[in-house]
Length: 157
Image 1 (tube, rainbow, N blue to C red):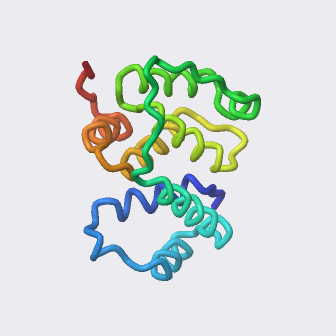
Image 2: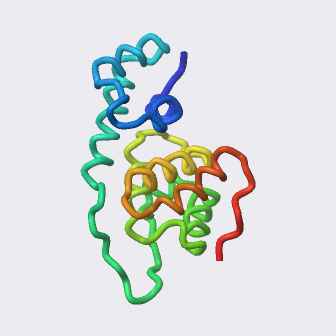
Image 3: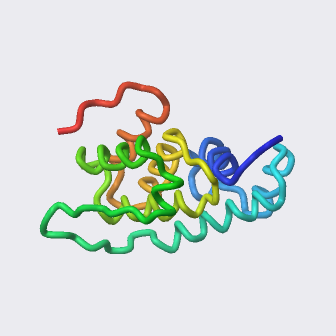
């Protein structure tokens, strides 16, 4: 099986996201389950590191700009996030789904995937995971969840 960190994260998200915290298996059990599902130890370790780094940012206060900021992408970000991905992030920000702090966290987590090519579906999943991890983002998470799972999300105003 050709897998990457995002596939491991998606598997975890799809299979354990709706469990109550007390029902979530411990890390060793999750690692064993992931190995049985065909993921390599290296990719599993990378996925848990990715999640640990995301958890470090939980509830971090972001900078609240007084004006709409202009995001200038680095050359590495532009190489790995094509125009469609960058446009999608801007679209989510314009809709109010992502604030500047969440946008930066999404970009950070996308770059941490260590994938040469990041596609729009990858961006959607990372946005979903970031919104889920941040307090106060429940409505934006629900809207994004509809988008990821191909339901027609309500128009944002």
